[in-house]
Image 1 (cartoon, one colour):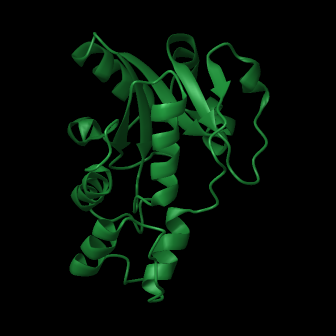
Image 2 (spheres, rainbow, N blue to C red; image 1 turned 90 degrees about the vertical axis):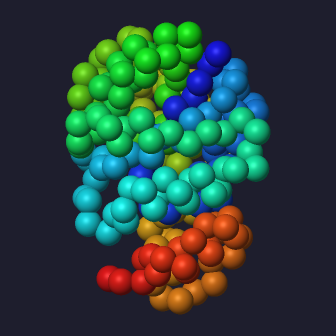
Amino acid sequence: MKIGLFFGSFNPIHTGHLIIANYVAHFTPVDRVWLVVSPHNPLKDKSGLVNMYDRLEMCRLATEQADKLEVSDIEFNLPQPSYTIDTLTHLKDRYPQHDFMLIMGADNLLSLKKWKNYELILRDYHILVYPRPGYVVSDLLDHASVTLTQTPLMELSSTFVRKAVKEGKDVKYFLPDDVIEFIASKGLYRQA
């Protein structure tokens, strides 16, 4: 089975994430998409990141009606910060029956050369790239392991959502209703 791995902080998961995951699951050779909740991305600031279990639960709430989307906490039990190559090696050992592919935005593709052992990722895994506003994809697109998808361009970001929640704005349609209720019930993103 071909599994697309969509890594992210999902802080919080929003409609844009779900559109990208659903597009890849239904319009590419991928059979299923696993949303891999990352405890801490080594290339991102950890401040403002809510508890990983809350982010995991929001992902579960957001995908419970999706037939080809699953949520994974595989990185929760791996050394932190999480390096993609280490997670991929762990997944390949644990699920040898699956063919894993990476799903990443054009912004991440541009920073791929900063990733730990990025050459091994390019050598051993296929990467499905979705467009991101303001990012022109690099010459890595000429690599045989990289495919640019026709995923709809998403301008929505978790940063925008967090700011809107903090300011008391209505975030309906930016997030699934269950995620909005979860955020409200736990008082997430209300602080600076």
